[in-house]
Image 1 (cartoon, rainbow, N blue to C red):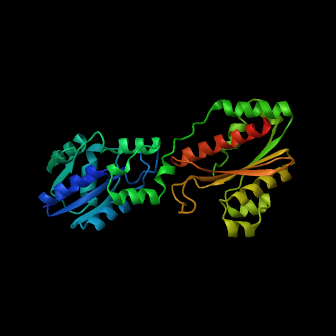
Image 2: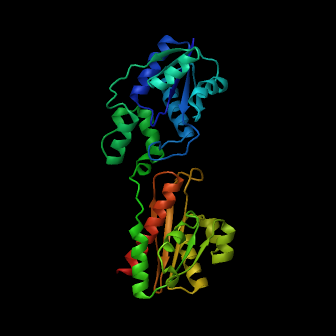
Image 3: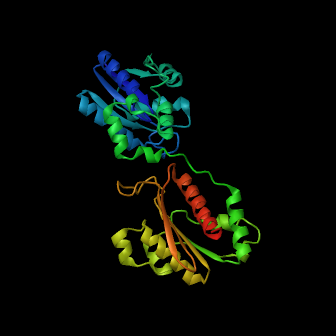
Length: 324
């Protein structure tokens, strides 16, 4: 008999491993379905479908567990149709295991044998509890297989789970007040934020008194042609680097004749990250009348959250400069 076990596995913990081992005692083979596989990473679901497949494969391979196949399983908005869709995309299976009453009911409704998995130490062996501990810096490694702990350290999960910075409407108002008070003008060169910073700077009435221009230089060519960024620096350091951010800030300040030039470049995700520059890596530069300086950040959350946090930190840097 081939069985199906569907879960979110955010992350795969010892409770999941116990369930897999128990199912294999009752089944000839097992299909593990990675739920919500099509969705982007977010605060509640910090691991992508591919990362969860890699994570579980490491456990299976290291422990010599056999006759297991892993497949991504997307969600469908129409719940009654969902089990038929799963049936169509996965190898034939005869029994469904899980601890979601909704999932078991849906498969039972179309004729499958179902069995609820006995929850082992559910108060600790849960993705929610593990993610909470990671965010708070509490002990969590003893709740997951050692292979999972090693993998989560490899992908810098601790950094990914950092609390998300909230955007505040007061921030742009403070920037507006300080720019007006000190008689300073500003222009912004944006890459990863796609114009969000310019949008926030112009949300305040009277912004024409201090905001001169905003340019979205998304491509490398735009950075070179519109801001004068050195192409060799992009090749050597990458478009997402402190050096490029500084040249962007200097370029927008010079071209627009402002007192301040602000620039951001980063990796908002869900793709484009690397071990050296993971998703959420952002460089923010501020070029003033006396110097150019930059800050580097690693934000957590999905694409929109990374963009929002970048805009918030960029505006905070302006406030910091103007209040020195």
